[in-house]
Amino acid sequence: MSVWDTGISPEDHKLLEKAKELLAVEGKIKELKEKAGNIKEDITDIVPQEIGDVERMIGPKKVVVSRPSRNDWNHEMLLQIFGEHDPLPDYVTKKLQINKRDFEALPEDTQKTLFPALTRKPGPMQVRVEE
Image (cartoon, rainbow, N blue to C red; front, side):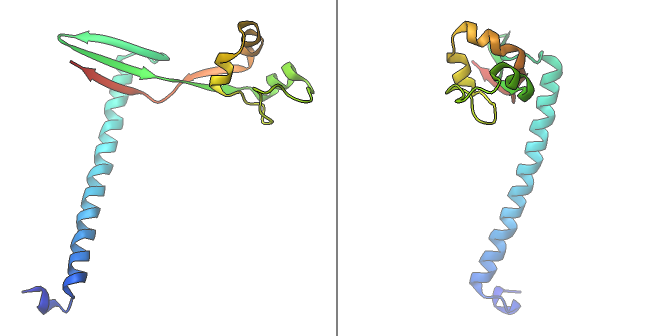
């Protein structure tokens, strides 16, 4: 049976075929993302969850697992540290959050004052294999 026999215009037939193709590709992408997630979980079981880079030489290849840090600020502790400062220092937002780069640029004594309010957690893992 040809396209002409179905009562569907050639343009609609092409659209339908492309839509089916797109759905198939999106299904494969979803499967691959799930598989990648499972592999990352397996890698997490092998490599310790540390902030920063963990490198391992495996024969001629180097596997690098990188995890950035995620900073979570304790709102109540920051209120205690800053009290009712008005205005707040430039590096502190009204939500009492401190940008990671701003924090890292602060003098060491200021960082030490703020450390009790900071919780660092490993961020999303990235894996590279280098020759």
